[in-house]
Length: 273
Image 1 (cartoon, one colour):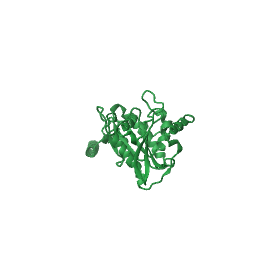
Image 2: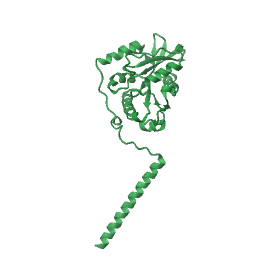
Image 3: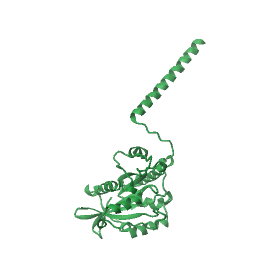
Image 4: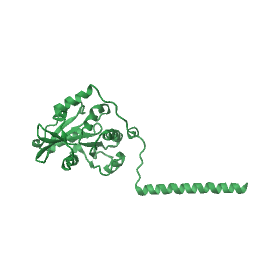
């Protein structure tokens, strides 16, 4: 649900980038800085980064098209990918208007991608209102990277969820991902959806940092664990429909032949007796 900032007289849509550590969330925002003029965005703000890792969040604002003769601001926020920082990540995702899930498509990181997406799915299910989702299949430039079509199957994505191939480090797919997220965020305003007052903790980056720091006093570690988070290392078999039908037919024929052989053997044994 979009917000209205009465002090600035503008609508605000929060787009939260989620994903495993080093998947490319911060890189996405850095590339946004490259292609959006400084006149249409704020500076990127990353408090207390450590060795290239986001400890709290990345934040920036981008101007959108006017809505009802009022300005529109998109707040782009990336969250920590480390599982032990989930108490910082979850409240930001819960307050998102749109989520962008950045996948690490490289073969070695698929289990981490699946675990992190399971956590996102848990958060989405706990919300009172649906959370629009865009999935970015990042690191497609890595050898053996899982293609978007296969990644869609592994994540169990519904057909309406957009998935964007990307190589964010090269700038590929970043703009397309942001454009899709902005379109979903604007949809609530275009459709006349509910608009709430902007929470003061989201008024700017400093206020958000103070808000996130408050999580340290009473971190929430009561997350439910999705079954798929526990089973990411289980064998996954993907069969095309034709192959699956052939497999089922073959299994059925094998079963029938086996039953026929057993029946014939029993008949021969009964006659011999």
